Length: 75
Image 1: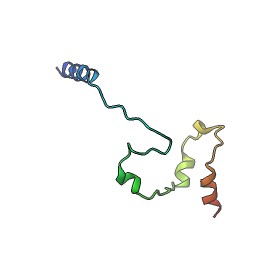
Image 2: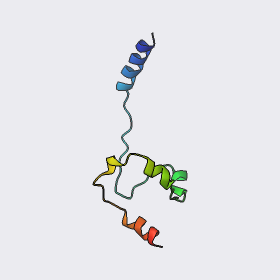
Image 3: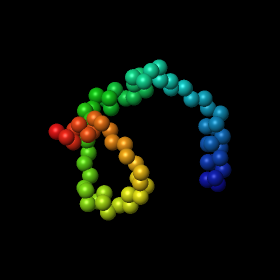
Image 4: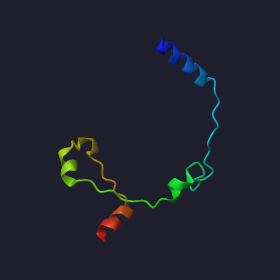
């Protein structure tokens, strides 16, 4: 019964047209919530022991560090 309802819902969604959200330029933030954009960004720090306990092999060969973040660390 539920699979039939799910299938009907999928079919109805496939026939629905959604508005196309376009970005006019790299600095166009019209599709973001104003309250979200007004929040001050905060850097979050993780527990070093927790990070070291995780498998980091997925990051082998990864060498990019954001230059702006390096400036923050140097202060």
